[in-house]
Image 1 (tube, rainbow, N blue to C red):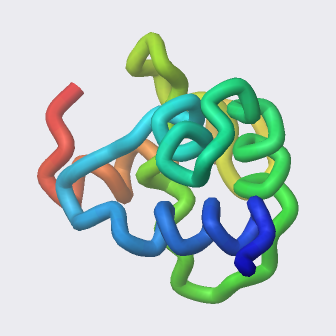
Image 2 (cartoon, rainbow, N blue to C red):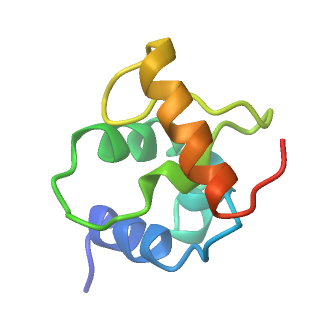
Length: 89
């Protein structure tokens, strides 16, 4: 049986280019709809190379943090990655 973390990483790894999911949607797909903060913590602290965590955003459509940080430079990097993948804001 997979742990919640493993399920989250599996869900996030399957988000296609040009698409996003909210932390809440990832939590729901991983089996615990109220665990959106846990998803955020996992996205901020994982060390899985190639995991497209930049595709996980806040429910209100804003980007939130990235790579465990919330500063303008990091958010700009997340926005640019998503734009290159075809996400329209």
